[in-house]
Image 1 (cartoon, rainbow, N blue to C red):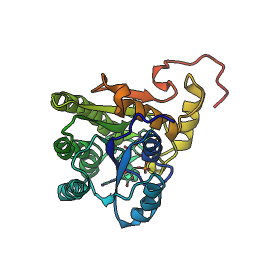
Image 2 (image 1 turned 120 degrees about the vertical axis):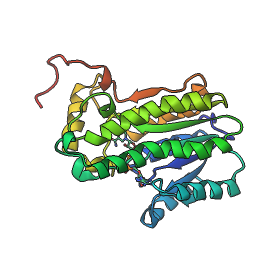
Image 3 (image 1 turned 30 degrees about the horizontal axis):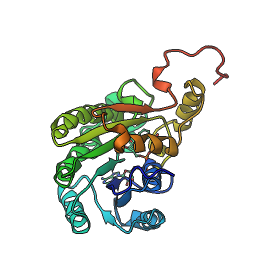
Length: 264
Ligand code: NAD
């Protein structure tokens, strides 16, 4: 067992249940010796997050709705009463009205466009505004994105546009915060069956397609993502910032597969 995160303290945002990508990341960080705090959205999730946090030795479980600046402020105010500094942040949050994660992108409504961008893009910047002040010894931040930012994926629609903006914001944040030794990266994960993913149309088909067409011929797990997150958030990633790192069984490098793929 590695102790590469010993003495490091980090905030995990976006844990909903044990299928969440945030859970795969948190587990790997805790196994490597990190101390963790968790934020959750809404009282209903608290009862799921409390026992998961406890399993990783954490009793810091705080509410935060990222669509509300005051709620982000109170999260960091609460966190400051427990810790004087912060070493890393994981932002594993995204949201869009699921009625617009099917059908045509062109039909996206203004209200859902704004909400999707607010929760899935701006929130990361808003969090980093607060986190920066606690990262007095430098630090690392990680957000989660998807290949639908770069290429058309069925039903991903406005979320693809939001992820493109999120990836761009990772680069701008990397530049602004690099002076203070804070690294900012994204992981572009292949499709994984989670609560958020269940809102996307034909998700089972998308998973099958990735399984058949990726070089590794399988889908990735939250543990695959967690291991790469550990690299990016630890000293192993010390020279890496502004990066979108694909953890997708190689799917993003494929133009067209040879005929060994089984019939779809
Ligand atoms: P998930 O449902 O487990 O996690 C999504 C989280 O977002 C939940 O914890 C939810 O509470 C939180 N959230 C939504 N709105 C919020 C708000 N207003 N304030 C605070 N929290 C809010 O699903 P997941 O798949 O683990 O998603 C985590 C991240 O990974 C998302 O950004 C998602 O887009 C991204 N991602 C997922 C996949 C996939 O296939 N599952 C692939 C690539 C990227």
